[in-house]
Image (cartoon, rainbow, N blue to C red; front, side, top):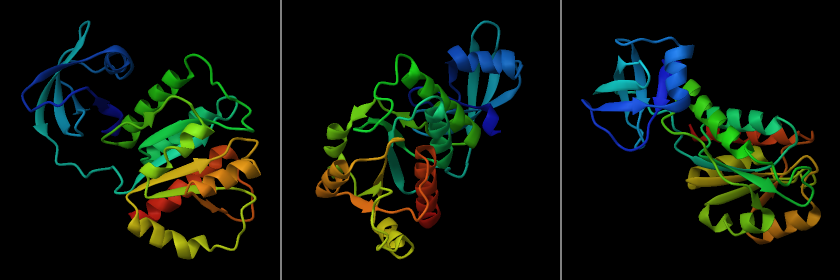
Length: 244
């Protein structure tokens, strides 16, 4: 049913009628070719999931919210945000889609010293938000990955204090720390974690030093150097495994 899950604004209750608009209405009517009497799932802003009946699909799409579904919460217990160095081309599309599937709470597109792309251009952020929503529908999430406006490295440092742990993977970091031994303890204590991933050019020594001074744990992900679009997925998957 995940492919028939749609998100609406505000909090609602069983018995209400709501309107599904824009791209979601197009998908229901013209892509899935659903008709009045068919059923879908609706998730409101509070994360409630409703079994919903299509009441009208001519023009707008009106649905009747029937019973609340007693569904298993697909949101992880550990809140993970990712600051992602903005890669070139369509790579960020892939990162946003996969982080959404993994249950990441938010992504902060990051412009840093060696970033190939500093300004993603008009329309890119909205595109990423659409991809995040589609991935949330597909993967059965109760919420949509938040895609923030791009920020600079200085602004990012100022946000470190809002997290229990900030993990800063860096290809030049010493491999002395055993992540296999350390990460379980980190996850056990933390409720909010920020993962900071560098751009295709990597982080400079100065940036890594400033991140460490601001409270980040500069870590190594092993002997192999991972691409920017791979690093966050690997670390997030590890954290999810340990927390769940």
